[in-house]
Amino acid sequence: MSVTVIVEPDPGGHRFQAVANVAQVAGQTDDIVLLTSKGAAANEAYGVYLADVPLEVDERFDDIYPPTRELVRVIAELCRTKPVATVVVMDADQSLKRWWYLAPREFRGLARRPRVVFMLTRYPAKLALSDHVGWKLRIPKATLAVAAMASGSLHRVAGFAGREDMTRGWIVKRARDPEICTAHSRDRSELRTELKLPLDRRIVGIFGVISERKNAPLILESLHAGGLDADLLLAGSVAPEVWAWIDGLSESDRKRVIVHDGFLSNTLLDQLVAAVDAVPIALTNNGPSGIMGKALAAGVPVVSAGSEVRARELRATDAGAEAEFTAASIGAALGRVLARDPAEPRHNTVPPATAEAFAATLLGTDENGVLLRHSRRR
Image: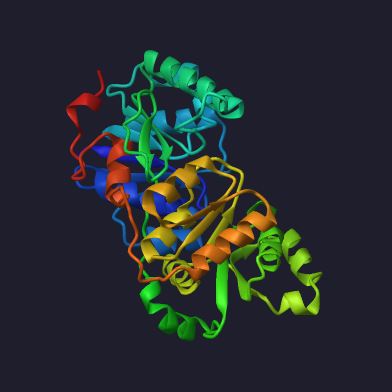
């Protein structure tokens, strides 16, 4: 049986969830090998997302960001010992820079050269002509992708796209970020009782790795600016600098901040998202958000600031409100979504973004893992 090698050295965050999505589709036709860093299988995320996925784990790398030269060398070694048909590099933005000239050298002489697929996690899909920063990111990556394809060492490239983006993409295929949540806001009271969250308070939540970039102080300020009697939940691994901010809060503000510090299993994360009344996302990276996808699936309104991609998603899905990157604007938007009747129907104009469709777009297959003719290696 042929083999698909999925390369993901970093087990942190929820990266292994994306690996599981790809493995479930590719595993319908191939055996799966996860090429990762040493100790990855002992990571909590592996137990949550991959423990029940049939695959072989090959822990080769000493670092979660191995040099491209080492990455290519190890892949070539696997191709000499296994019938590797496809290699999927799950976070390929750095590898793309040198792949076009390193990979052809390492792959030279292989009895069977693999079909190589790259996933770009930082590729802006839709851009306004005036977005100079976005074009400075996009043009070099597209050029390097074309160079690697011309060298015969790369055959397909995909990038995260907003859930409203139904276009296919030319050089970089647009893989809609999945919206998946195993819990729903209709069960909010039961979830709060189980999670020991207050039943009589409005709660807005920030989730994942809670670093400075999540802008928790801005969200708390927005609650004040909007005159909202609501609490702020911080759920996930809280960074030291955020703890320093929490510890410095006044007594009255500290009572309004609920902290659930530590790694969140997928089930627990989903339950926490479904248990809050709104999810504010104040991030300046112009891309989709996995937490936003969970909120959409759980029926929890989102307030987004700092991303035109997320703003377009909100317009297409009628799933919340967009705001400017200020406390006053975010507070006003939170006030609007908290005042909305949860039973009011959403005017969603796009179909749900599924994990199967994401994986199939990345792989260039149908959702049964069968390679589409237009994506076959020439």
